[in-house]
Image (tube, protein in one colour):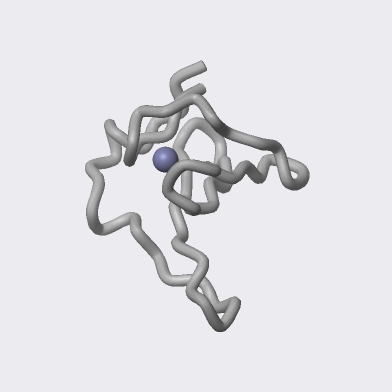
Amino acid sequence: MHCPNCKGRNIGKIGNQQYYCWNCFIELSLLGEVMDLHQVEPDGSLSSLNDLFTEDERKANW
Ligand SMILES: [Zn+2]
């Protein structure tokens, strides 16, 4: 799979259905076929990035 934001493949698995892009520091959670994208803020909270992408762009591309 690749990161929908940077198109990179520098993605690590951090949990069950959860991945992390080491290029742009976003968290990818797989919900079925569609990824839920979050940015990890410096204080550790998560802000959703889903609004920045179409559902098509968020589809997991294995
Ligand atoms: Zn990325």
